[in-house]
Length: 189
Image (cartoon, rainbow, N blue to C red; front, side, top):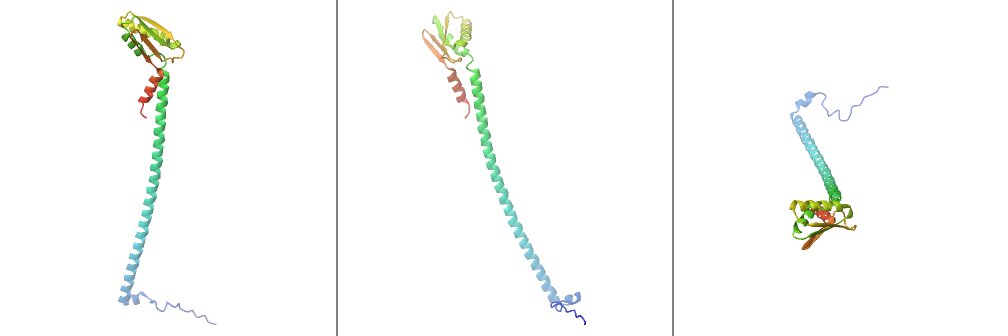
């Protein structure tokens, strides 16, 4: 039996060599137009796909930047709150340590100045700071060459930074708690 190799159905329409295709200029022109149209269609589809991907990428980047900006804003708010709390804690620490150690010498000196015409200046302070208050009053009186009797009374209900000064024509009071509150109120919120 002999085997017969059958040709494919389209083989009979295909030219057997390139000379036949080159011999038909209309067919060659149609192929060139088809190739150009196919190239243009592929190029347009590629550009459309590229544009679509670029828009998707831009939207993704914008979304990521928005999330990062939100996180940054939240972090900055947390840092500002923490800095405010730290500043307040530092001020409270300083106010709590520096102010109540002794009655303010400036307030005692002011009392001595105002009581210059009075025979007696009476200071009321916490028992732990009585000696410091007396020393500050005596130094202020000596600086003014005032002949003023200075009496120092103690009151355990006073804070160490409190002082009440009384003289014949007036008086003054200084509260460590009020000075501390004024210091804290002066801090930015």
